[in-house]
Length: 158
Image (cartoon, rainbow, N blue to C red; front, side):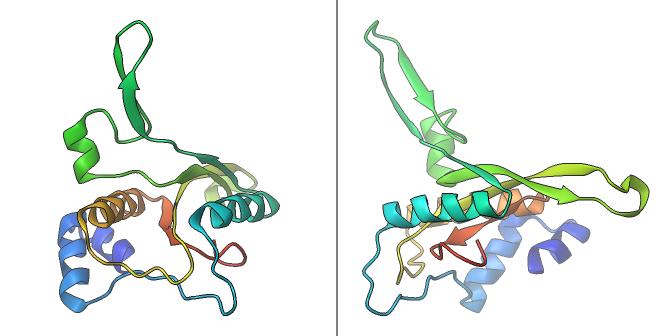
């Protein structure tokens, strides 16, 4: 809700991020009683649940390395350079969620960009450099109309 309001008033994503930090509003994932659960296990379950809900999510591997021919290559979203990747880290899962438009576009579907940064059960935002960069990507994507967030819950509200 805050992101939508900020977008309406042309408030920069960075300002919203700073406000959330000042208010102590950080994302977290509740622990699952009796289950340790891993991020990798959640990732697979979340992809299956998303598919059942009509979404298509793909693994967004990010990295860099040298090929056999000696050329250096970077892959993944927001990884054009090391400095960009340090400031903004794209989510683990990206994809499209079908949305039915009403009124002027009755009956037409559009694809809404969706991004999920998957965390293990019990995770709490610590505000380290990596999490801040992940949050920057999520807030930027939301400011552009995407459905993006941290998640650790395989069912229900992806």
